[in-house]
Image (cartoon, rainbow over all chains, first blue to last red; front, side, top):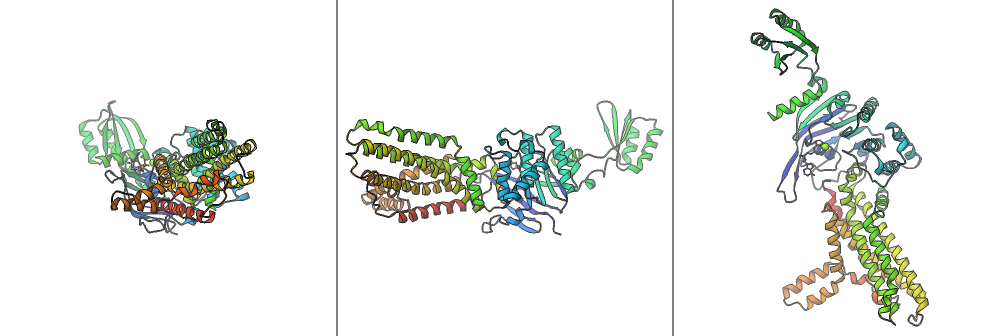
Length: 320
Length: 265
Ligand SMILES: Nc1ncnc2c1ncn2[C@@H]1O[C@H](COP(=O)(O)OP(=O)(O)O)[C@@H](O)[C@H]1O
Ligand SMILES: [Mg+2]
């Protein structure tokens, strides 16, 4: 089975009207997302996430490189190539834009009917699909209200609903939880988990890391247009920093011993010191050193590096 | 089929636009009160009403057309609904044609409303000034309807050109200005022809001639004389004029599509 998404050496440079100012938003990006996978596309604001997504959907054209969806070339930068074309392919894709915006003079239901018709869904089938997706996102109660009176969370849900209309195999979500209250966030996250359970491929773009962490199989971290970390979430984190030991009054001598064992020592302003272990099995060796130097252990906890830690570390390394 | 979906949606959006409603109300106000203007020249009441109303429909029709067609895509780019729409299984050509259809529905509705009021006013006048109108009202009505149809043909062209220009722009300002400019120049093509014949230099004459050769001649669509004389005869023929307009409109749409085809949104 071909991957759901293949992005190869993709670059995008925005040019101002006379080509005076150039911004390279995406720089030689290569990544794959397999079918059924949940991919977290992460990066700080302005990293190039939305740009990548828009190229995937044929809303923007790349400067170079190409994208394939389900094994078929989807976008090409050649002026003579057919415009984004492949409608059948697009029927398999649902897209939630960043901060989705709809025709304000329509009700939620009318918005869905409009997009449903663009998928070629008509009549009784359309009615059924609309009520299905409204139920899925929990918006039946407000479906007949005008979109202009919707809150941010409601817009986000209608946005998800329209992305789900064709029961697509691939969902591309641009910042699905940004600006939502904790309850709404939780619900959207649960919905993503449900979709994952249904076997959908999800491409989730976000800088809300704790949420992504709970749903993603694989992540890519992009900064200034370049992919700087890419792989299975479990492979990227946890390699390092398995246990954190907090001690009081660590002597220089003991610190040297620990560092010789590849432990990382961080002295904090509180007077406490954190000792990070590279691997769990050395823990008794480390404890032995601490015991022999009579160092007082304040706290000891097994620690998994969070995606946030990874993200901040990676972006910082990149800047340095 | 998707073009119709896009078109109806664009139409629903357009008829809510305050600018367009304001233009329509203003035009209706002028048409409705045109009978009061006639006190200025007694004996020519019917002629003045026809003159005022025709130019009013033409002028406000033009404003409505360029605003309706010129603002559609910049508006949708501005509020970013275009991203969601283009992510759906539809080709950009479908989208462009759909939007143009939406603009046409809006223009037709507006022209229709203005024409109905125009006809009502003419009917009331024909009752009042029987001696001034030697022909039966049915003839006047026929000529008026033809005149309105030709105004619409002109707007078909104008809206397509404004629509094409709007592909280059992020706001409606540029297409609106371009549309008004084309309207003015298109109505002066006969003067340009004259000018080219009497130009001071050979070169200037050639330049001006190129202009009037490529520009649509909107005076063909302006049935002022026929309207005033209740004369239903149109020398060029309605079908020919329609083809003339459709060719220009098709050209505008084509340019618009070429500009939009690979545009980054
Ligand atoms: N239409 C545009 N014209 C010029 N520059 C743009 C445009 N859109 C985005 N950019 C720039 O490209 C970079 C990436 O933007 P974007 O893809 O929106 O980032 P993200 O979604 O990761 O926050 C930013 O520096 C942004 O300023
Ligand atoms: Mg973004």
